[in-house]
Length: 498
Image 1 (spheres, rainbow, N blue to C red):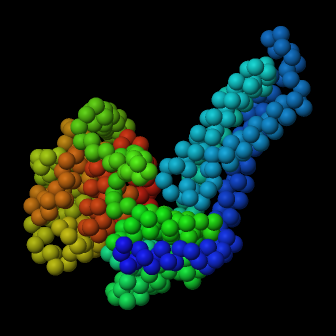
Image 2 (image 1 turned 135 degrees about the vertical axis):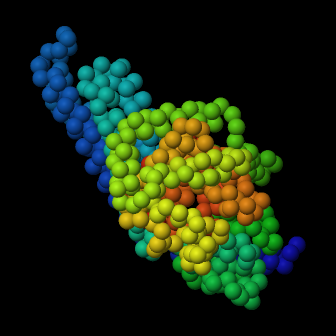
Image 3 (image 1 turned 180 degrees about the vertical axis):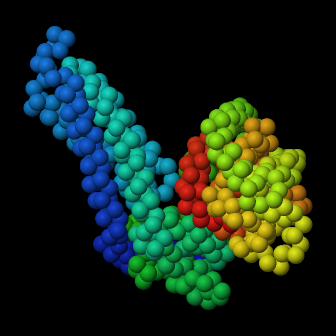
């Protein structure tokens, strides 16, 4: 048995006394968040049910309708009150306000939708069996209005929560446990994704304080002193990453040591940038094995994506034709040269195509690039310059709101590009790609993508590649819809565009 494993085994016996059950309570912000969501849910549900009841009785003002008596007001109000209570109870039973699911990922929305659908399924059956006249109105009106209201309310609450977390509040205090390199990597990821709400407060390494070095994190103990470190740092979450000393038995004893303390134990596998739908847990001989599905680059769903791309592109070209014409006139009127700019880009499987966009620079801008190379403000193979002298006055405005990219709908219609995908690279950029970066070319490039909604030109080259590769390997229709929705917000704010 390894030395670190032995030390952790010796420390496991007194651990419960080191971290008593009442030593670590749920964070105060978590309780406030759950209470706030409870109140907001109640307001939305009350509004939906009240509106449905009022509208239903307005549509049926007579006492007799179709041979059946309209239920008295007291009965209608009682049914409405029971629905409100049942709805709130269903949301609670589905744990839709838990701090572990609120604020990140689709699970929160799934639980809200599932709780609502199941409730109204049961309510519809009871209303039919009990011949409740008001039941049909509640199902027809309260259900869609309430569900839409709850999803919108949770989305607004999530945006507010993300803003608070980026300011340094309303976050879990995380103690990282594991090898130095893995701890450094996880800390960097959690810091980059601050909206997820994990604030790293310290680390426990196999070598303890002697291993701190250039970690840039406070090392507060070794693998054997995690319970003590939890008390010292006030952590409410322990995140474990792979390490030589953390054998399955040692990890199990760590879980026992934290049992009943209110501290969450999170295990981060040595697997990153793989989306949830590709991961399946398969218990084998008591071991939770992660099965990772291979990325899908071909098949029926890709064919459907291509059809949807072309149909949407054709519709947008028709709908936006007056705007496109106006931009073309503005470009021609403010600087000499054509309205459209054509450039060779690299598409799927390395095939080149001619990408079109509105000209935002002076004519001959590409010939001026060598003189500006030293002014490059971007790392990697990209050239970006905030105050690029080649950009025209109209072009700067077009770039800010990505209007210069609208003609790329023609490329989508031709099949060269997709609405959503990796950034379309230049041949000179592809020539400098490393082998792993070339995986971006497995799919069509897109007019927008994760790079567009995550910072645009403000992203580093490493982040741009990481986001593109994540999209390539984890594509789904749902992800495309979310990216298109977020693109509208990114374009409206105009951040990261120059």
